[in-house]
Image 1: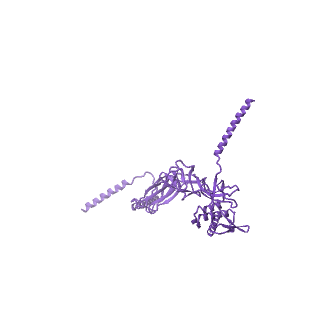
Image 2: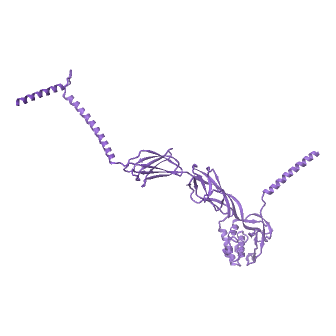
Image 3: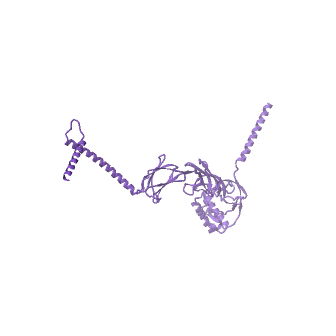
Length: 454
């Protein structure tokens, strides 16, 4: 039994130690609710009156400050003001109260608010807070100080019409068209800037799915991991990356003003003060899209390097998914922009007027961010070439005519022979010996006549 009791005591000791450690860790890791010691300062002035049960009642105020000397305001006019009380922070008030604090004292000076003293500025801001919090009605307020009354109405009206919110927001917007331009070995986007209602803060840019070697730089071209809220940034993409897209997201640590509320626990007034508070925010994803393209340029010149207008070329990509015709302009050039990198086949399909068509097929290699250029010369159509063409045509026609004539002559000869000669029989003797013999006899006869005359 004693051994069993000893074992139980040991187990209880171990469990007690574990639980104590957990309690200590929780006490360290769980942040305690913030609190503020609120002090009051008395001041005197011409107080306004409000109607209360058919009587006029002075509505007074005490000037409240936090332990850090920040100006605070009362939220419960029917209770006593805190004076050295430690009030826990319980969140923030609504945006109407926030706007009154934003437009009123001490964010603006008494002179900016149109009153004479800081007490008047404080009192008018306090009355405006009670009105927008529905604690009193402005219609029931009877002005004893016209400047104060005017400021109260102004603050209430601005708070009602204003659009400022205390919920911290973060947006990232491009400063120009979302395009990329080549800068050395990189393509860079236009500048982006962060937009927030914070008073200060820092941010970093997170890339998701970016090509290897992509980086974030500031406006001065410096690579950075952390930026102040006033800084702009751009994305650098390596030139050799393939076309595509990826996401960027801005993560920020921001300090913004809040209408922080402190709990009087129904003993004393709740209080509010415009105080800075830290928060972490992330922007929505921004898609960075780029397409690395090149261009090609054809220069058409004559034999003396004169620019030739009107030459028409057909440009076809090697894989056949692109086909377009381009015509040279006055300066002899024809350009195609925004071409995906690759090999293109160029063929002249119409020569400039007065020039010979160049049948040679050319290949051009288009590279990212570069202009592939080629110069093509044309020969003029000369008079010799024209005569040759005419001669060739004439010769061809002449040959055709001669052949037809010969065929016609042969046909006539055959017909004549068939018409004038009977078919011969037996052995056919040649005519040449008989003609020769006749010529010899004729020669002898002529010689004899000559001798007789002599």
